Image (cartoon, rainbow, N blue to C red):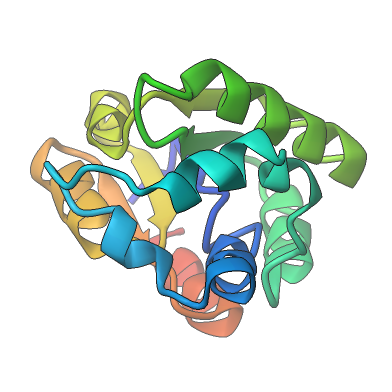
Length: 161
């Protein structure tokens, strides 16, 4: 397979969003991420307290970036802001995080994870931690790696090259 472009998700791949959310609110953020579920006040508090700017690196994220940097392939960020309501706030915070982390890839910050499918073309690979997102990306013509850990992701990327 010829890889034309690699898209890397932020939350759960580069940043440890789920750990921060659980530390702050004592609950799994995934409960907030289901389609058609109204987001709680915890979500608003997370966004308005600018948590996305200061998230910790996800385990192995720097190693993953080192690996993709070594490839002769275009790389971009593809991350959701989790909806239109706080799109501007989350987008701005994620850009600050990327700048502070010195991650200079072009950033595609979209107002919902379902929008990621519009980046799905033959030769495009998405690295994402959300099963329905990777399934949909593949369904629409791209390839996807369900990120669980850096070693598995790098192995799968090597197999695609």
